Length: 320
Image 1 (tube, helix red, strand yellow):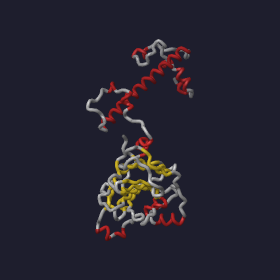
Image 2: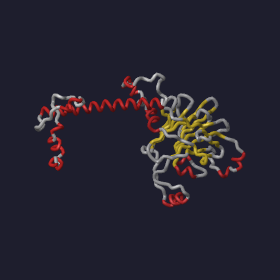
Image 3: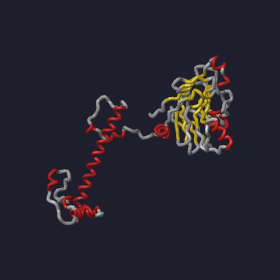
Image 4: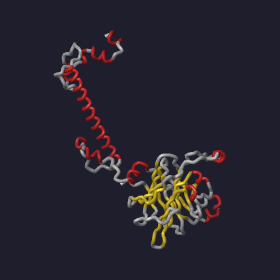
């Protein structure tokens, strides 16, 4: 034993320890009697090596089956906790491969893949809202308002872009991809924009310079959608919900009609990164707003017109 313990060759140690050898006749590693089989005292023969290979394969198969059962039970419990299970719960032994496939639906189209993988929770920033806009307490809705108090203190609030009031999202994104959805059906005039962070700190932002937007408004019984830089865009029907998808690395901003699951318009080759002048970076840093060569991109929401019932709503991303 002392001699074996001194060896640094693990394989030699295993081959020299006779109690590890099990006769080929006892192929069932899990059979109780197999542990009482007489050990071999000679080196491993080809037949005994094959025997051990078979036992290893059987052990691996057993482990695979056990792990599979554990996975099925975990999936079962997750579905129960999410309230997705039917009233009559199947027995664990009756869980099939079909049951496992239903846990995650593979995307059927490009929009579904975006919804499943890149959805973010957007909340409006009440402190970065125009004086004409009112943001809900949960930060998910914005509408026009007529408030004498806010009119009196108008100089303290952000003023809109070319007469269009705007409100920024709280969070910005400087990498990767992100996606959110906005219900626009409650407004006769709206604008959804993605802008660089520097505009969030300007009292009179010029979104035309560094913003990527989609505009929709009613013209009598007609409805028009355009980007501001192009003519009217063709849409099959009046838009109800618009999905906004940004790919920072590829420099793309895309707008989707969620109801028809079609692409409305996509900006490509967008210059998100920039070289910040040292003086400007220093001034913004002193003011508590540090800038970098990879500026954050912020969602911006706008309502125009005179109807106080106009409202935009940030909705939970649909995954159907």
